[in-house]
Image (cartoon, rainbow, N blue to C red; front, top):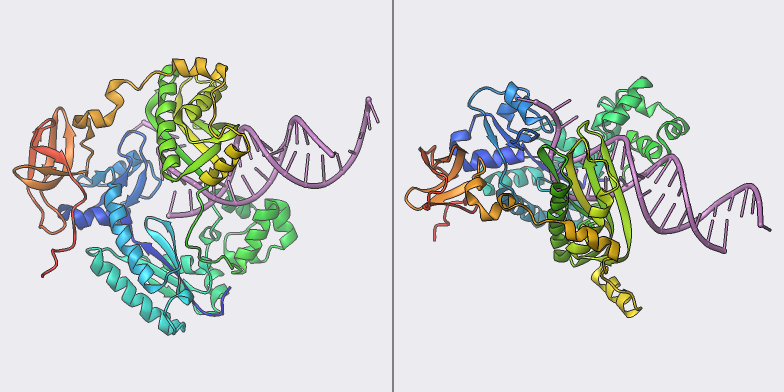
Amino acid sequence: MRSEPSILHLDLDAFFAAVEQRDKPSLRGRPVVVGGIGPRGVVSTASYEARAFGARSAMPTHEARRRCPPGTAFLGGRFAAYRKTSAVVMSLLREVSSVVEQVSVDEAYVDLAAGEQRDLSADGVRLLAEELLERIEAETGGLTASAGIASSKMLAKIGSDLEKPRGLVVVAPGRELDVLAPLNVRALGGVGPATADRLRTFGVETVEQLRRLALPDLVSIFGEAHGNGLHRLARAQDDRPVVVERETKSISAEETFETDVADRARLESEIARLAEGVCRRLVAASAFARTVTVKVRHPDFSLQTRSATLRHATDQAGAVTDLATRLLHGVDVSSGLRLIGVGVSGLTTHAQVELDLELGGLGRVEPAPEYEAVAARVEPAPAGMVTEATPAVAWRTGADVVHAEHGAGWVWGSGRGRVTVRFEGPLTGPGPVRTFAVDDPQLSPADPPEWRPEPVA
DNA sequence: TCTGGGGTCCTACCCCCG
DNA sequence: TCTGCGGGGGTAGGACCC
C-alpha cells in the first residue's frame, strides 16, 4: 500500500448501453438492454433506465424482458463500436500516465505516480480526475465514467463503484479501513457468492466483521491462498502493482445451443469450427499450445471438462480438432448438450518451438493413426450455418447498416423476410423507420458510425 | 423461455519418480 | 523388493471477474 493516493481506477458507466444510446438517438432516455437476445441469452449491460425496472447484468434476457416495459430496446451488441470508443478512452488515460493497465473494454487502472502528475495530494489527484472525466465525456460523445483514486488497486476500484454513475471518490491515505469497514464482504475483489455464503454461516457479512476472524480460522475454512487473501483484503493490504501487459495464458471459444444437441456429427462439426477460431487467434498471437480442453454443459446445467496434453505444442486447427474430438468421445451426450467449448492452454512462444525443432522435436503434432479415423468423420459445417455466406440471416438487431438511398441507420428488427431499419446516427436527431426485404440489394452492413463532428478546418 | 462468453487462479487428487 | 515421503506434472472442477 502506498503513502499517496496514486492509483486511479476508471470504469465507464453502463458502457455498452451508453454507446448504443449515443449512436441511436431514439433510444436516449429509454430503457436499453444489451446482451444475448436469443432464447438462452443473458444481459451484458442494462442502461440506468432499464435498471430502474430491475434489469441487471448476468440476468437471463427473458427475465429482463418480463421486467421491462414495452418499448425497451433489446440489442445484440456491436463490439467493434465498443472497441472504437474504448480505444479513445484508453488513449486519454495514457496521456495522464504511461502505466495504464486495461482490465477490460470498459475498465482500467492508471498509475499516477508513473505519470507527470507531481501533486499527488488528495486535492491534486481529485482535480486531475475531474478534468479527465470531463475530457472523456467530451471525446466519447457524452459517455460518463466513474473514478476511484486510492493508495491501492483494491481501494481505487471500490472507490470508483461508490458513487456511480459519474462518481469520483478519492480515498485519502489512512482512511482505507474506515471506507472498508461498513461494506458488505462482496465488495472485496475475489469474494463471490460462494465465499459470501460461507462467511454468512459464520455470522460475517461486513468487512468489519471479517476483520475479527483470526488468520488460522480463515485458513482452515478457505484454504491457504484464499484464507490469507481474505485476511489481507479485510485489512486493506494490497500491494499489487499496475502492470501494462498481461500475458495470455489460455484461449478458448464456446457456444450455447438454442436447443440441446445430442447428434455427435453436429457436435463434432461445432468442435471443428470452434477449434478453427481458437487456432486463428493462436496464430495471430504467434503462440503454440500444448493442452487442449473440451468443455460441455449438460441439460441440467452441470459442467464437465476433459483435457489432454500434447507432447509438442501446436497452432494447427487439425491437431486441436482431432484431440478435442477424441476427448468428446469420453463424454455422454445421449441426453444432449447445452453448450460445447474448445480451449487451449500451456501456451509457448514461437521461439521456444524453434528451440524444440532444433532439438529434434516435431513442433507440430502429427495426428496419430487412431486420430485420423476420427478426423475423417468430422463433416464440414452444414451450409446454412456459415453466416458469412448468408447475409440475409445476419441482420442482428442493433447492427449498423447503410442503405444506398436512405443512408446510415441501424437494424430495428427483422423477421418473416423483412428487415426494419431506423435511419439515424450519433450526430442526427431521432430518425424515421423503414422496412425492406431482407435481401434488398441496396442494404448492406456498415462500420460503426463516427460520433465526433467533422473537425472544422 | 432458466442461467453467455472469455478469461484467471486455486485446490484436490492421481500418478510417476527418486 | 517393499514402504514412506515429497515434488512435480497432469487432470478435473470450483470460484471469481468483467
